[in-house]
Image: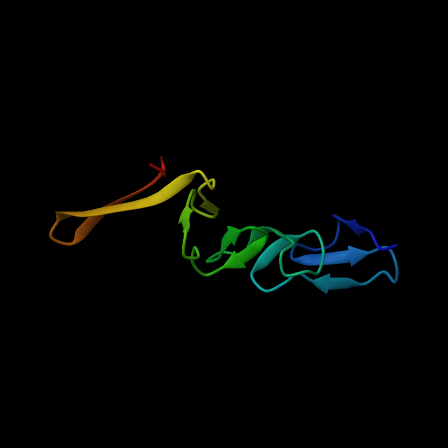
Length: 100
């Protein structure tokens, strides 16, 4: 069986057999396997969402930190609020609120 070890260069997976390093999926800086959903950290400019590294958070998700997108639990609804606060700036908030 193949096992990953951590002392391979960043963004590469190394296998015990046949002792080769293989690049992680596009956008990943660290991964647990070669699959599309195996990213654990993303390269700069990408956001982590359910094991993938994406350019932006997908519809129905929100940016929970500078590098991670999340989805509200099923019993909650995602609410976006934006309001112009200055001529060139928009204040923006995202909430997960209980459904009625």
